[in-house]
Image (cartoon, rainbow, N blue to C red; front, side):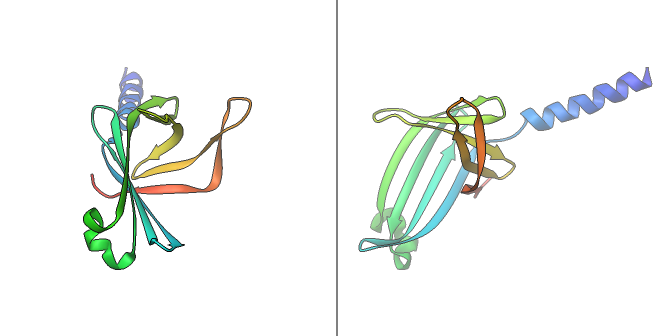
Length: 135
């Protein structure tokens, strides 16, 4: 009897830790670039509890980073996020539509998954890693 209680308890807590992952929050990625109109880009993906996301891309000069909302170029995409096996699919709504298979870990959103011709997913090294900037 004690053996079954122990097995149940371990299974219960593993299930909670697996399904209890909180995806909500803002994930951010920064990249340096050299163009006549910018030298820095910041992309933020905000995931909300209703399984939607808003991706905001900012592009501008590093000296204006404190005023990025007003001085930088801003591009916004919206979409839905859903779980598919161990991965998540973020699918843009509107036109043009696009979707990406991503991996979400504790405090990271990883754009490191590519689909192979046979339909299987493969993780590539050097993918884009967004860090969670809030809880």
